[in-house]
View 1 (tube, rainbow, N blue to C red):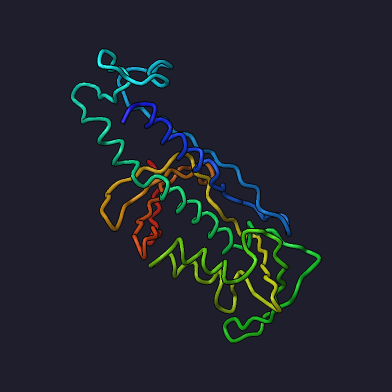
View 2 (view 1 turned 90 degrees about the vertical axis):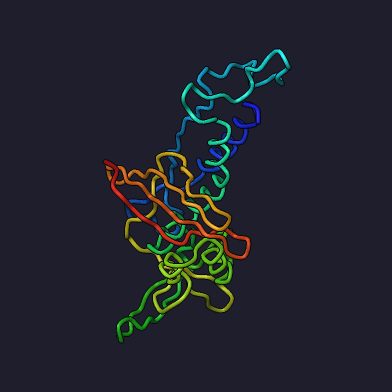
Length: 246
């Protein structure tokens, strides 16, 4: 793999990850998607020498090996390690984006609604009847409860699926469907994550991999680590471990 191909691969993946939503730490305006701003930066170093324009734009010849991926003395081959680390970068990006979206949904944020079209649902919470106002969804991503259910089940399994099931099922579900219309309840709980860099991939097997990413959290930095598993040809996040960075 030459430098041009490697750089294009990483640029495409990072462009994708820059679309990840950031945390909505305050109550979102009712009827609007929470403001999200990705703070995604990463440096990719594949050689001991700076990459020149010539090395990127011109194919290598027998006498010109500057476009080949090399390593600094005493380090393992850069091409092998880089390829392994980025086998599942796009999968990890998608799963961290899904984690952000699901966290916001569960907290009552990040979904566009029409505040003039609302409906009260009576919820049975701890044996008590609680009236809760839901608003008609105008978000083009979700037009039915089935689409919401599919989103959650396509991206999560195991412990994380159990955590986010209440987005679409149960008395206090974030979404309700009535007469063919989809409704969503808003809340003021803080939600969402501000990712600070690109995921780092490790522990790759045919059916699992681990991905870690730095998250900005109220002035501190935390490391989110997900375990991804393969189910029916789909990569899904099955667990999340959060640790404060030292």
